[in-house]
Length: 450
Figure 1 (cartoon, rainbow, N blue to C red):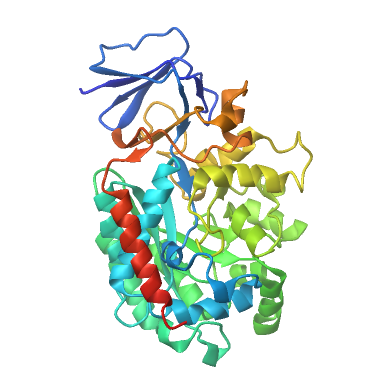
Figure 2 (tube, rainbow, N blue to C red):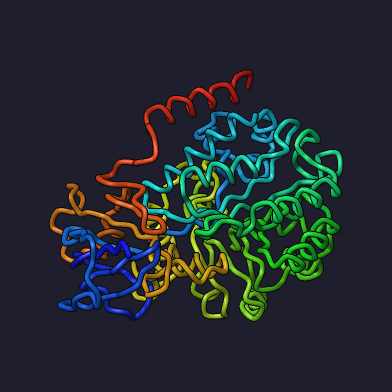
């Protein structure tokens, strides 16, 4: 076998109790050994990688994003608005999204995440204007081209502004179209490749953009095919009030009534739950994606991470859309998670290790994946390497804490399935400057006229 010994790392976060201070042995895209300090590999190795200057992490896992929004970062009409007016401002711009623009937005977002140490991405795409009916296929092809692991969630919107929802009619679809395409995408892409790169989940956008019927039908289809369910929930108090007015229920009661309160489901944001609702979420094993930067930009609130985890809910991390963050950097999001949770909890109640857990094993649990998110024998060789070679790290004593507290933002090296995707802080899969130029042009075209 073509084995690689990642030797003697400066520091390691394994995501478990294993001592990996002697390094990791990789073969055929998997971790085959985890070595304590001083241990030697059980079998001869073909290559070694000196990791003595690197802090080694499981590849970071992003559980909520909207790739297309990279085209509307820092968008003037949407600045300094609350969630609902923010959405109403941006929907008419997004309605003009073309397949070529979507492909560039997807690639740019994924490469940006990769450079931050992220190896698995989950995108929530719910926008299907005329001509963009194959949006998820575009993303799947891009993911495979890049060799990145992805959970692509087939979003949907069926309630336009004419029906009491928020989006314009031009971006919503009929329920039959949504369900037929959801089934097609699962059969076409879900777990069809040998390297475990692609999964599909079903993701009606939010309670204020789809009907209860599409929520129930999506839950039934997800159960039939054993795929995940994803949506936005309890992001703002405005959403709570909308659900009370529209359905006569709080968001979680509504979710329960349409068959979504189970371990197949993960929810973006999950901020405004009361104590009783948190217990119900935990008992059901429903996952939560914490999106700290987005929640701060839109002044939505602070997710109750510790209470959710204590109740039994898996909690992961997400950058959310790049129109409300406005970056796709998951390593920076780890620090932001630490800082915002310190506004809710005492300093010894949420640590840098808790923040790293959110972005690794916690996020893997949210996506129901038991093959990523930690460094252990049998796990896929998705690994991020960081150097402490910038002025911000000078004087740091605890290398692992320094990644979070001093604000690491760029991985020195990244591998997925044992294949190098980033070396010396450079993306190996293409020309980043050309990708940025093409993406910037697409952003100008999408925004023109607005």
